[in-house]
Length: 301
Image 1 (spheres, rainbow, N blue to C red):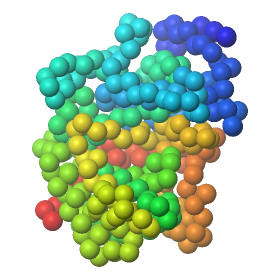
Image 2 (image 1 turned 180 degrees about the horizontal axis):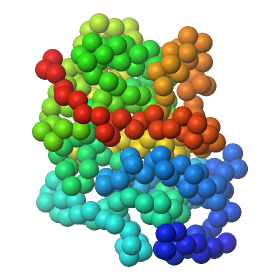
Image 3 (image 1 turned 60 degrees about the vertical axis):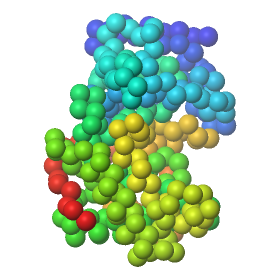
C-alpha cells in the first residue's frame, strides 16, 4: 500500500492507501478523493469552519458498510483543532473542527467521504444559523418533484422578504436553506417555523407535499422534513462528496438551474459529479456564501 508524506502550511501529513479504489464501479481512488477536496477546499472550508464535524467513513469503499464517527479520533495530529461538545446526558465529547486545508486533507485521508455538520457553530450550539427544509421524494416521486416544491417555497419566502438558497443533497433530494445568522434565534424558533411552513404546503399542495414522516404518507409525494432543525442533528455539508455508486457532490444551484430542470423534466441535470462541481465552483464562485453571512429574521406565521 502506498504512503506519501506531504507538507501543507508547514504541517506534515502522511497520506496512505492512495491507490485504493473507494468507488469501485466508477474507478475513483483515495488519491482522486484527496485531489477533489484539495481543489474544492476554498469553497467548502467556510461552511465547515467552527462546526463540530461528524465523519462518515468508508474505509473499504462505498460498496461496504460505512460508519459514523462523532468523536475526533484519538490518533489525530496535534495541530487538529477540536471542540468539547456536551451531550444530552452531560457527558463531554471531543469533536473535530475542520478550519484549514491540512485538517481537511487529514479527514479525507481517513476515507471520510461524507462531511456532516450541525446547523450551529460549536461555540453557540443552541443558535442555528439557518432554518433548513430537507426535501425528500417518496416512492413514485423524484428530484424534479423536489425542485417544484423548492420553487414554490422560494416564492413563498420571497413574499415574506426572505432570501433562500438551494443545494442538491447528493442523493435523491434537495436542501433549501433560509439564512438567519442572528444571535437570538433558537432551534425552537426554526423548528416551529419549518413545521408550520411544511403544514401550510401540505394543505395547499396535497398531491405534491406531505409534512408527515410515515413512509406510507410519502408515496408519490415530497416529504418536507422540518425535524432537521434540531441541535442534535446534522446535514451533509455543501460541496461534500456522497457515498453512492458515483462520486456525486452535494452542490448549490442557481434558481434558474432549478427552473430549467423542471421545464425540461431532466433529473440528471440535478446530479452534480465531482469534476463538474470543481469547474462550476471555480467559474461561478460559492453560490452558498450568503447562507453563512446573510442576516434575516423569521416572521411569525
